[in-house]
Length: 559
Image (cartoon, rainbow, N blue to C red; front, side):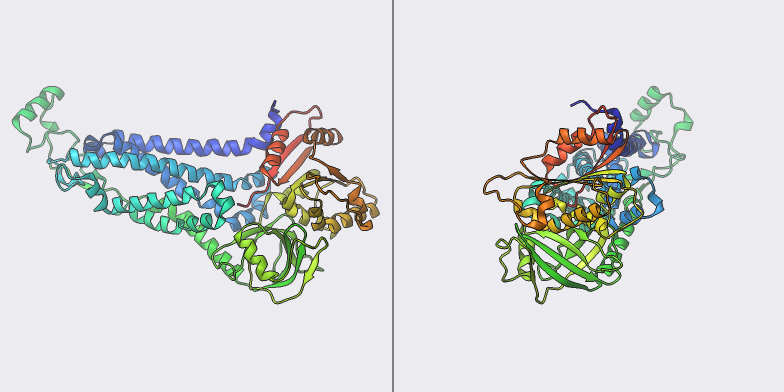
């Protein structure tokens, strides 16, 4: 498909600029450190012993230090939410870059894994060189205790060696469990192994202790390669002939060496302190009691949870992190807010689909005797509910829906939850936003899924008709599964019946229609659903159109 330069710059320009700056920073740091150890006089004798393994190991270590510090920052959710909601980040483009924080986190993680392989490989060569190229002239440079010492023995009897092995094992666990297949099938494995980062950083701080690599401190008194007093006469004569040495090239004293000062803590301590302070703040904030007001069972294994928490405020489009000690004290799961607290109503709500072990056990605690797959209309349950902790709210791309003149919200199944809060805001009369027209497309496999928010959709429709703004809200519902298809025959759902279509949306036709209606405008496209829909919308947002309408793509992502 042909790509529009204007659309590509709007959707991809910012993140690719950040990506190029990040790659440039890593490249510059690698080359700078490599040349320091390759040409630096203070490392002359060490380089002579280890060769290129020294340069590559230290250059890769510098890149690892940078990325081990950067990888923490995208996970500071409270800091990012605060920046999004203040004038610190006033530009919409800058706020959209914040939405790529997870992508940047993954990029830093991949870089850590790649350069860890480079770093370990180079150090394996170094250990072998320490054993083979044992220096009799400079004993303090040696890591091996004698010439020909077994490299495995060197690794397992030194602090950098042992900690390096532990770091590799932890990194291997974290990386392998981060695969999408693992997260989708068993999120708990990902959660627990990823929390090994605490151990990882503790070991990383210790890794540099031991002074394996040393630099020369007395370069002026002992220029690298000078004629030493303990050299043999033949060695002196040959070096004089090769270099034309004179008396000034003779060493005035023996070479002195000191271990390199550890640098890792300088890189990591700042971001680590920010992250720890943020987690402490989040822990204190989440300890405030949460009261479960109502639990409602919806069709297709969906549970609605309405809660109350003191001093809790949120904006439409944000999400919270839920913890239920009755299921697991250590697991926290993100859920989009479907209702926000207002002046008249202090409760807030989420919708969750029962998929996976955690949601199944959580639902059993909420509705121990209910059958969530029988009722089509919601069923209210009154009982004593389990203890819950709520952390948040946190910012998400859906907050930007109100910051466009025209927005297109596309939901697939339970992915409708971020936009339900937007619809509640319209219904509750929120003011102060620039949105002039909202296109809403919801695709579901089963007709019963539309009952999750059927009343909300009808209420928004009636409100806008009463205000004589029927064109403000353009609603399209698609049901893709035609087997045993029934209609929404209830009278109160008539506005939805007329907008219900069978099959899948014709996305290109929809984009062309929106483009012709909103010429020369920027349309915010917001997607929360399956990857297939997301990829199609992303591709269409970058494609050229005769209407010169720019579609800016925004995607929800919590995993």
